[in-house]
Image (cartoon, each protein chain N blue to C red):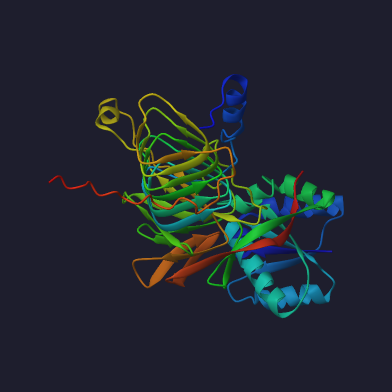
Length: 145
Length: 259
């Protein structure tokens, strides 16, 4: 696992904070998006997304947001609920209110206390390829004789 | 050379403002041909006549509906006959979002803009490849947004759907800026803030203004209404057949703006 500390960590976190006025798409709390959502810029999710969510920019999933989709982004901050696999090229931050049910592939991962994660987690310093996140094969429990 | 297209109602009820425009434009050397827009006048013919006389700056005198009328005729003609023109606006009364976008708030500012002749390219929106708009197209409630690969629906009934080229809400959140020259339009879903029981007890009046909540940058979108014909407000009121395709025409308008 590649984790970073101290100044590097702070600098990294600062770099993917969404700057005012630069968010390209805002999915508000009273909106439901269904289908394959694609974006070139930063995306802020406060509502519901069903299907898939891909962005070349940063992703921020706020508390109360519900995503039932495979997620791909450059960097992500998650404070809401995601059911599906998450592939993040750079850094993924799971906030205290985050709930992720699915596999995670990322380069840098930070998890705040209180975050819930059900799934496999792969963190490596090498470049994360989009679409690499295939669901892990489910292992059936062996029957006891 | 300028052509001032003066709306019928303005000629009838705003003599003082029109006299002031006449005086200022003559003093500043920006006077030109005056075309009165009556109900029976043929705007396309008037525009062609102006172009024939070498006039390439069209000035709408009135409100957003006046500007929309001139622009739509000029842009439709532009598709058939290749010509370039510049557009400006003299706001008189009523809704003047287009003039606001050009930074023009009064007759004086309009004349100053014409004298300065500072131009800026703006994006345009086009509905069903027929009706052009500069500021925003506001759709009826219960309309559904369909993008190429996904659809957007609202979880509440009382919402306001619009496709904006400029910030018509004025209350836009700090995290999102709508720019009229970035080559994209914004599909916006807005809501009225909830009027809670406590608000009622405190005697607070319910807000009539919509607050934008969701923003989707678009180049092309289909909007489907509940009925076959939809009444849309796109700079002026329009009746169009559903589904409506909204497209962006990047840098489609060259306007004279007030610095």
